[in-house]
Length: 409
Image 1: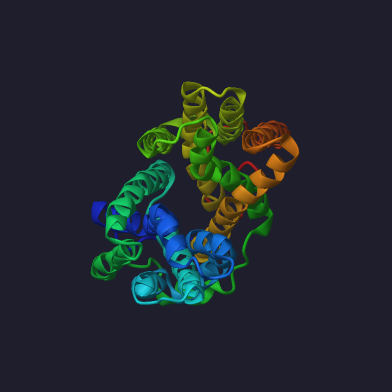
Image 2: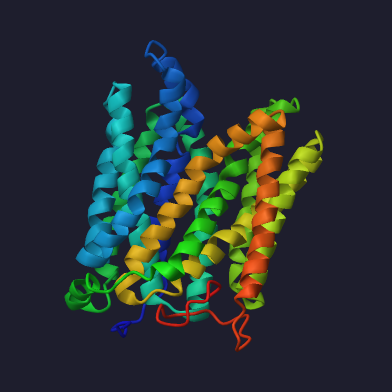
């Protein structure tokens, strides 16, 4: 049974949780601009062409693999304890490449960063679910996605600026997590106390209501990450080599993603059936538009369509999973969803590469992923309408895992 809140959360708590959530984005994009410098520095290391990109991507894989376990620990030990420990270790592991000069050791430190990001993201998202309900929770989860998107653009710019001082310089940014430790310790709390944490181990996770949202979120993660990774390569393929122009195109897509996430709180009134099908259909259509023409404006249009759709998609998928969880299972459920999303993001370039091998190139592979996204939209429309609630409640969001196991709820 959900514990009654003993305090009322407000803007200070929201700001701390949004800032903490953005740390996983920092890990994903900050060092992207200095990867060529790292490759040059480690040029004599066998397999450098594979190992250096792993420095950027391995945290996402680790988040995908460990977030479900982080959710278990969050429910058993407590949200705040895990968050505080993860913030401190994140700073230590994140700055480790400043003094490490072995590529294998650097990758090992990035594995630890991924574990910390899984704990931070799971704790922060779980606490948002604890502190707020209903429309306010939906708005704040949408705001979480908005902040993450804006942060990604900002962190890429910061990483590039710091990279002027050498490939190690951007790693100093990982110390920012220490700024959040004292505010998190003073401003955050866990509703229900230690008894709820102890009782949570006896509350079963509602697998029947989580499995479909998590499986769909794997596909959603792959679609969301597709153009984040591939847009620069697509533009290079049509002869656009200016880093300034590529950066501007990426920024426009990021703004579209942020706009979609920001509008989630208003769009949720249309109901999850409509949103999920429209989001996957629009995202897929945008990817197909990217394939359809070698013109920069057309490709940018497709990127904007996909960016906007995935901006709304992420909070829709998250609320689909989180809204059905009681307090005692919320950490585990949030961790499971986070893991599913990041597994999808990690698989995205691999899936596109496989599609590209049979579709005649990168843009063809992106088009196939777009077709898959549209197919998911059709399948969801059929499945969700097949499970339509007999009481005809297309907008109501479920808040309890004990309700009828309708896959839409």
